[in-house]
Length: 92
Image (tube, rainbow, N blue to C red; front, side, top):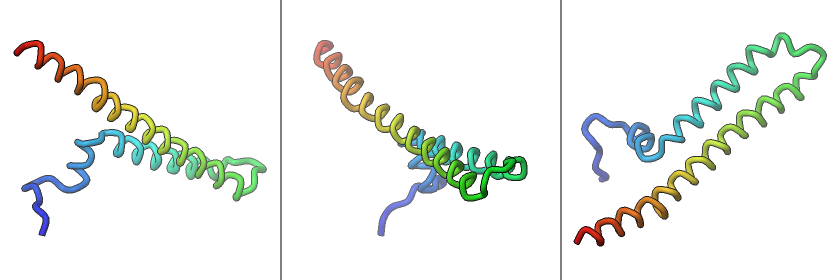
């Protein structure tokens, strides 16, 4: 059986580890909500085209958030961490 934190859920723990996950989810739902509100005023655009545009925009936001998250974690791992290690070695 795995151990659980007292008051933190798995989502909150993951959000602390990678803050871009909730940003991507929030952006996804915001884009879908906005496009659903604009559904009535889509003009003469077909429903399928409107839904495809909504899906592409939402997926694009999520992929962008994931890319930024990966770049941020690489920056922390390969630039900040070695710099802190070198600083610790210099202080000894």
